[in-house]
Image (cartoon, rainbow, N blue to C red):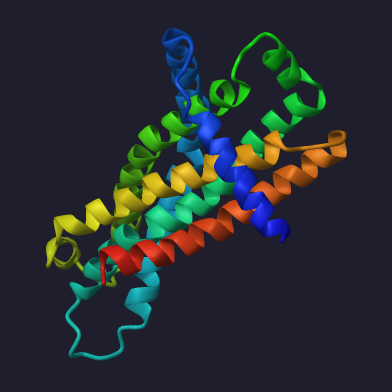
Length: 246
């Protein structure tokens, strides 16, 4: 029963979030600030994870190719397909759920327990729209750029790991990356990324906004935000894969 109540509160929160903004200039400035906070500040960890993720995928693929019937370009093909279809959009989104989601939940949760949100409401400001909408716009707009960069860096990491170790040649890996490429795979990955971005921000904001108590409860809300964002991302990943690829 509590889960049904929580879903109802979440849907009601989204209704308030997407109400008409009072002052578009204020929301525009906040959106630009959130792009820097949520997106640009996450570029470093995304880049590092992507390079090593691609390197591991390529090395594991090469180490498991025992059959001489499999051409060497398969390494590049599997690295590209795994990166674009699953690893970059899903794994990076799960990492961002931990970094961005916990930050959003703790920020809004702290404002809630220190009564800053109550002050906004007294001034006649729609606190949900003011606090959450710029974050949603910033994440849905900027996360696809992060994932595209992640794809490129992951493939580069895979390329350097297997060519430097002599497991395949430059020509074979590049041919595998280019072989059987479908533009629909990129579209599928970016659609997933936008959905995941919305989930991360909205779920984290929900747990932050409905925090009750003190500083200890802010920490609990932050933990719940990460856990539930990750769970909903995995469920959405399953549903989107069924709808788009099957």
